[in-house]
Image (cartoon, rainbow, N blue to C red):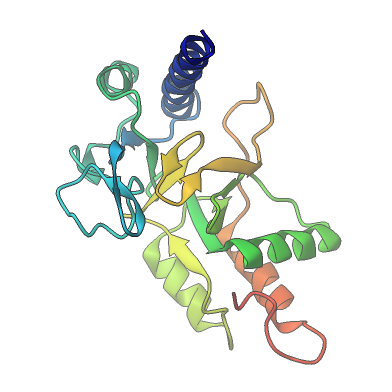
Length: 226
């Protein structure tokens, strides 16, 4: 009896998770006008020596469940009918945001450095928008920017932490409540419940603050190095 009850609880939890992904994808695409698409899923019954295996054809995939695959990134859309069709057919698929263009971009750091960075930015009183977290990396969503502007911004800096990654035009980012090979994707700083399209800070303001946080460590060194 306990096994039957436990199985039922797991099935209810699984259905709830699937519904949550569909609801989230519709919110992103329709209410916020963020282009999304389903990413590669994890194979439920297959694991490798390194952990969970990806549903894509690459047996050595280094980012299982954390990248676009069938459809490709260019298929990202804000069309509600397409979004519902995708996640009705693939309810376990992660939600992938196609960054850049008119969509949010992001600046990401390793998780430990990300926690330090947010603490440092809070001290300065800087206003941040949504922050996406995984067990390995945290991503600060920023307003859309072009590659030319990013290049000029980075060129003007004497020193930029090597731990920073930039998710701009032609890039992508997993959004909650996806699950990838590294674990659960969640909001470290969630958009305000019931709000319209979330406010996003300018990339220059975020990079300036991160560079300052990195280089202001007492005794030298960088608190965002890892």
